Image 1 (cartoon, rainbow, N blue to C red):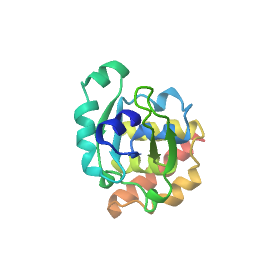
Image 2: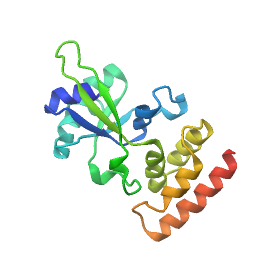
Image 3: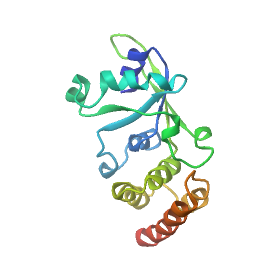
Image 4: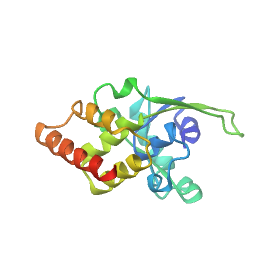
Length: 173
């Protein structure tokens, strides 16, 4: 995906913020964490070009039909991750494609920031993702609880997320 995106928008650095960003830190992540076909991606230095990526590699595209996953245009404002998330991105070097030799860098959300970003969205599937990541020991509950207070959400949502996270940690142990 990242190498194809590099070709399309002539950029070399991309940020991946959705569930697929778990692959940046855990390339052998459990299958339960890899169900999403959607790759939330944007060019790091030109976020406005994300829509071009989605146009070429998005849902229903030839790329999607061929590889089974697709690009979804997002931007830096999409990540509702704890403050400082952009300083903790995990950088992965993507080799060039054989036809072009054009390589790229994928900047993936650090797993704790990813989980908290998903919990801030507060959807059932995101809580399931968090449960699976905790059960697989891909994240540390103490780091999640420590960073939760840095989420850019309302105090009501923060209180709800924190209480639910405490309950989830107890269930998974």
